Image (cartoon, rainbow, N blue to C red; front, side, top):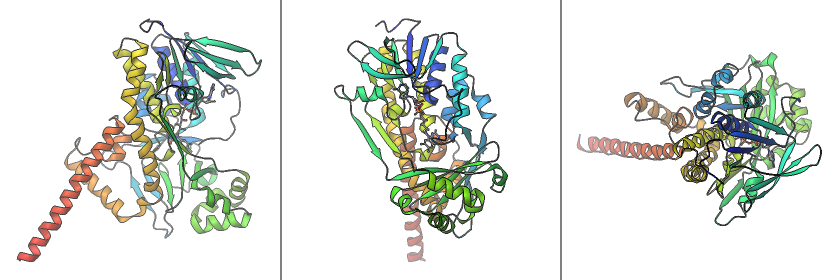
Length: 440
Ligand SMILES: Cc1cc2nc3c(=O)[nH]c(=O)nc-3n(C[C@H](O)[C@H](O)[C@H](O)COP(=O)(O)OP(=O)(O)OC[C@H]3O[C@@H](n4cnc5c(N)ncnc54)[C@H](O)[C@@H]3O)c2cc1C
C-alpha cells in the first residue's frame, strides 16, 4: 500500500452523520471516495422515529461543518439555545444562561435534515460514489480487504482501499474485527437508565420559553426538551429501566407524569402521552472506549464506532465531527501519509475521547440532580465572576467543551486546576474570618 499517493482511494463505511461528513472531508482532499451504507438512502424514504430527532450542535461540530462549507446552511435551519430552563417541582422555575459573559449558544438541529444535507454535499463531489443497502460484513486485515454485501441482490464483493474508515456506529463491524487483533483494548458500559422520546406539538409549543433547553431534573431521573423550527419540541425522558417497567397502565402513566412533570401533561397532551409511552420501549445507552482507533496501515474507526458516549453533554456527534477535522489536519501534517496519519490519530485522540466519555457520564448527574442545588448555582456565579475578571484565563468547563476547541482532556485538567484554586481560596477566607473573630 502506497501511503503517500496524492490520489488515495478511501472507503467510508456508514452514511450516518459522521460517515457522510467524513466523505465530504476526504472528497475535498481530492481522494476517490466510496461510501457504503447498509440502510436505504434516507433522502428517498420517510425515516421512522428513531434515535433523537434533534441534536445539540456546538462549536466543535460547527467548525467541521464550516470546513466543508455547510455551517451557514445548517445554522439557518437550526434553533439557537441560549440556556437551560429548569422546571422544578415547587414551580419556582429557573433560567440558567449557558454563557452570561459572551452570550454564546448551542443549536438544536434536526438529525435527518443534517444527515440529508451532508449526503447531498457528499454526492455533489465528482470523486464520490455513494452505495446504499450495501453492508460491510467482513474485514480481513491480512489482505487489507473488506467484504460488502448488496442487500438487494445478495451479491458479495471484496474491496480494498488505501484507507477504510469505519463510521459504522456504536456496534461497528470494523471495531468488532479490530477487537480480535493483538493489544486492542476496549470497554463497553451500558447505563441502567434508558430513554424514550415524546413530543410537544407545534400548537402548544409556543407555551414554552423559546430558545432554551428545558430540563425537568428529578434526582434519579429527568426529562428534557429541545426545540424544533416549527415550534414543536422533542421531549426525552431518561429514567432507570426498572422505573419504566413499573409504569404499565394508562392510569400509571398519567399519575406518574402528574406527580413528576405536572406542567408537561397538557403540553404533550394526555392521549398522545399515554399512547406514546405505552406504545414504545425505552432505548438503551452505551459508552464505549478503545485504546486505539486504527488497525494495520489503512483501517480507522471514527465517531460512535470509536467512542460512543451517553448523550448528556451533547457531544457524541460533535466529537465525531471533530474526528473528521482532526483526521484532515493530520493528513495535512503528514502530507497524505495514511499509515502514519491513522497511528497519529489514535495517539492524539485517545485521551480526549476517554475524557469526553467520562464527562458525558458525569453530566447526567449534574443535569438530573446537581442543577437544583444551591452549591451548583454558587459555582456558576463564581465561574462567571472569575471569567469576567480573568477573560481568556478562566473558562468554565461547560463553555470550554461547548464553545471552544481546547482538547477535551485539557478542559478537564483546567477544571481540576480551577477546583484547587477555589478550594484554597475558600480555605483562606475561612482562616481569615476565624482569625478576625479570635483577635478582635
Ligand atoms: C438520545 C440521544 C441524544 C443525542 N443527542 C446528541 C446531541 O445533542 N449532540 C450530539 O453531539 N450528539 C448527540 N447524540 C449522539 C449522536 O447521536 C451520535 O454521536 C452520532 O449519531 C454518531 O454518528 P455516527 O455517524 O458515528 O454513528 P451512527 O449515527 O450510528 O451512524 C452509523 C451508520 O453506519 C451504518 N452502518 C452500521 N453498520 C454498517 C455496516 N456494517 N455496513 C454499512 N453501514 C453500516 C448505519 O446504518 C448508520 O447509518 C445523541 C445520541 C442519543 C442516543
